[in-house]
Length: 385
Image (cartoon, rainbow, N blue to C red; front, side, top):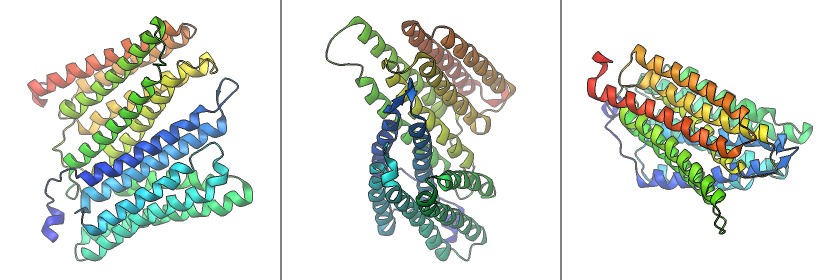
C-alpha cells in the first residue's frame, strides 16, 4: 500500500471521469447565460460579477475533484458514489445560476458546500488509510482542512446574505481555496502526482469547453443564407480552430508531460485558461448583437483573447520540454503582438468586418509562432534550444 502511494502507476482516464465532466458542460452553459442580460450597452454589472464568481467556483470544484482522483483515486464503489452525489449536487448549482440568483442563494451555497465537504471527507478517508505514511498524512490533512474551511466560508455566506444582501464570503471562499491550495500545496511532493494523467484531464476539460464554443458558433446560422452571415460564421469558426490548434501544440509538443511535478501550477493556470475560453465563447456571441455597444464589446473580446494566450504561454515557463532564453523571447514577442492587436481592435471598433478578420490574423500569427517553437524543440531538444 505504501509503495503504491510513493510510486504511483500511470493512470488512465476512466469513463466515469468523462461522464462526470459532462455535468460541467451543462453548468458552463448556465454560467454563460448570465452574460445575456444587458444594460446601458453591456452586461449588467450584477450579472457580470455573478458570472465571474460562479465560473471560478465551478472550475475550482472540478480542479479539486481531478486532483484527488489523480493522487488517490482507484475509482472503486466509494468513489463512484461520491462522484455521482457531486454530479447531482451540481444540478442545484446549475439551476441556481441565473439573473434572479438571490432567490436561489441558499440552495446554491448549500450544494456548493456539500460538494466541498464531500471531497474533504474523501481526503479524510485517505488519511485513515495511509496514516502511517508521514508525507501522505500531511498532504491529506492539509487538503481536508482547506476544503472543509472553504465549505465553512460558503455556508457563512448564507446568513450574511440574508442579513446584508452581500456575498463577500463567496468571494472570500474562492480566494481562500485558490491561494491555500497553491501556497500550501507547493510543499507537496511530485512523487504523489501522475502528471500525464493530470495533464490529460486538463486537456479533456479544455476540449469540452471548446465544445461549448462550437455550439455558440452555430447561432451564426439562422437559417437565412447571407454573405455577411456566412463571413462572420467562417471567421468565428477559424478563431475557434486557431485557439484549439494553439493549445494542441502546447499539449503535444511543448509541455513535458513526463515531468515529475505536483501539478498545482499547471492546474492553477488552467483555471484562467478555461475562464478565458468561457469569455471568448460569450464574446463571439456579442459580435452579432447590436444591443451591445462597440467599445465594451471589442474590449471584452480583445482582453479575453489576451488572457487566454498569457496563461497558455505561462504553461511553458515551468512545464516546457526545453527551458531556454528563446522561449522567454517568444513570450515577449507574443505579448508585444497582443498589445498591437488590442490597439488595432480599438481603432477599428466601428468596422466589425475588419475587426473579426484582424482577430483571425492575430490568432494564427501566434499559432504559427507556437508551432514553430514546438517543432524546433521536438527536433533539436533542449541542448540546441
